[in-house]
Amino acid sequence: MSAIFGETLTFTQHEGGDVQLVTFGDDKYARYETLDGYTVVYDPEYDGYCYAKPVGEGLRRRFGSTGVRLADRPPEGLRRHLKEGPEYRRNVVRDRFAKMVPPEERGGIPSDVGFTFGANRGLLPGDRVSEGNVAGLTILVTFPGTDSDVMPDDVIAMLNSPDYHANGNRCSVNEFFKTMSTGRLDFTNEVVGPYRLPRSKLAYANTEGLLVPDAIQAAVDDGVDFGRFDSQGRGIVDSLNIMYAGRTEYVGDLWPHNWVHRRVIDGTRTELYTVTAMGRNAADLSIGTYCHESGHLLCRWPDLYDYGTIEREGDDFTSAGLGNYCVMAAGDHLGRGRTPSAVCAYLRRLVDWCGEEVDLAAEGDFAIEHGAYDKVYVYDNPQRSNVEYFVVENRSRRGFDSALSASGLAVYHCDIKGSNEFQQGTLLKHYQCALVQADGHLDLETNRNQGDGSDLYGPSPGTALSHSSRPASLWWDGSESGLTISEIGEPGPVITFHAGAHDAAARALITGESSPDAPIPQEDPGGLTDAITLQGAGTVRELKVVIDIEHPHIGDLRVVLLSPTGRRAVLHNRTGGATKNLRLSLDSQPPSLLASLVGTGVAGPWALRITDAAQPAAGTLHHWDLRVRTSS
Image (cartoon, rainbow, N blue to C red; front, side, top):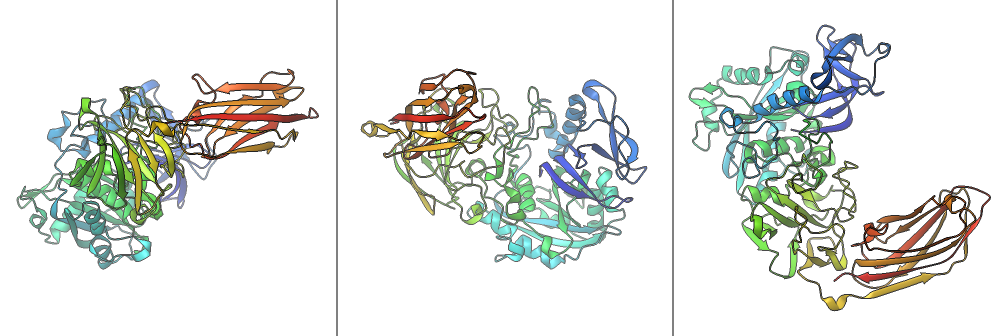
């Protein structure tokens, strides 16, 4: 269920050549726009993409074709960024979601519960085959007019080789799962084909339900024994994978996905399957999407991102979920799909791939190795044991994490009854697995990015995470969890930290002042920056700042305080009109303009930035000072 959030992709059409479209969605629902924002649909009558128009009204509004090709001007009065009605979208997604799970499991899923809401102890419904020797069947297919230079041996190497690094891939699919499971899962694939299917690639893209039956029939006609791929003795094919010729087409049945298709062949039934592309030549082969989809199929892991378009009650906002910090979120795309990020510790724990659990409630000093996938560090909620908990993991830029956005200690807030559809962070609406972002910016929840350099916890001599830090280690109901992390070491093969109360004697009052008597530049976007460097350990528990600025019109001024870690607080933003002179005395007691700086590291340069939006009203920064009380 690879998701695309606003990427520009190339699509094929019979008439008019390839087109570039901005794409939003996944295998269950997607919409497409031209580069200048007009919504489009594929019109079989014209064998190509046409501008879309709304059909119907209100909640059930859907797209229809205008019959105007994209090479022509859009119809007069057509609006950009059209969306189908939420009820129509929900119905489409529910119908397609039903294809993800075995038929007998579908009736037990409430209509307003989505794909990661703990229906099966945090996993997707259906049997998992996440241990032992699992032999999958991969069927290669081509289409009339669409071939591939990829040879079966190229695919065999990508799936099974113990020393696979072609095209920059970190390893084979087999090695990925063997590493993540610490040898518990040995997933190999037999590759058959390629078979030429009877219909064009576009026919499969734009007509649902044809690709998989045709691929299976081609293998049956070739005499493939499906019974050999039932390692569990269930009478069910453990893993059926279809790879098609050409680049990935993010449309219809060609969108990479993991659904259910049942057919009994000589007493063995097909069940869960995946669809991915093999590319145009061997240089296109990458393991990321195959690992992601196989994670659904083998382990029944949910997606840890937000579908957005399913419009669950009260939430139609698309957030980033866990971003690129897990292969089951956006991490399968890292390194152009060749260096997918590791499976996060939360999901490994759900399928019993962690043989050793370390209890962080036992206070003390800890050292977490990177890549020790058999071990998990957990802080449990005794009121909701094994339902809500924190997990801590070393995610330094090494190995499978070498392409991550950040490097350091990861803290996840986990709840198997949550859903990465819900970014609100409230008792009733919260993620299933949330990264506690060290900078407190909530960029993943607000979909500003898929991860950035300040998400993970870096070196911190004092308290980095506690009930009073920002962000705080509170349970979803807002109560104190008791988890306190301090004295975090440098990212690397081993990260050390202390869990439990930090020595209260380490609390200190740290002060600094500056009297620059410096002029404030006029109409200069850079303005004036003056810094006070604080020495000492710990993080901010309480903060007070005093500022003395001489200026004839304080309504022209913007004043921002920046911490050494990059967090910022806007202290004055062009208010006050023609009032003379700005003299501020602020503290961090809520509600406060300084609240965002509580919990940040103390040591380093604190910068005061002042910009003047007008002239010729010159001003001067005479003096300012800081008083910081560190956190225990």
